[in-house]
Amino acid sequence: MDQKRFNEGLEVRRAVLGAEYVDKSINNATDFNRPMQELVTEYCWGEIWTRPGLSRKTRSFINLAMLTALNRPHEIKLHVRGAINNGLTKEEIQEVFLQTAIYCGVPAAIDSFRVAQEVFNEIEKENASK
Image (cartoon, rainbow, N blue to C red; front, side):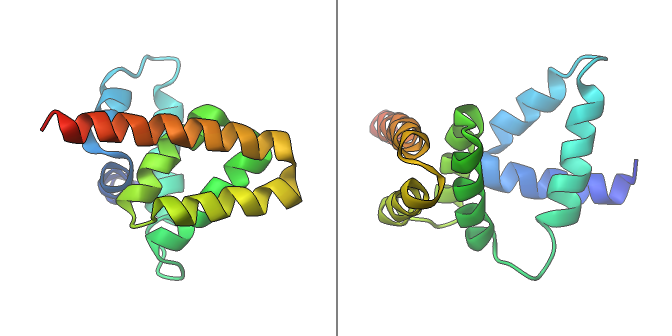
């Protein structure tokens, strides 16, 4: 493992997904899934998300569309929150899912809308309790 790339990836991963979520994922890793946590942190976040060619906001747009196409609701939920952290608005997220309805299928987009609404509701509750 490239420790420098891992550390850079960990920094970006925490900034996008939230330190609490990322630290929990890393700290709760088992001997079985720790290699996957390391791989994702080093290569996904350390190698790709740190590249200068696209902004984090643009990467979030792309991720939401791809995750909808792949019908990955758990990852969509995580990346909706990350997209908000990267500056996307609800309206922009809505537009991503409307676009995916045409190119990826209505059922996949409906699931993404449903999951995104769950995240928006959670964020509203969190903000109300502050």
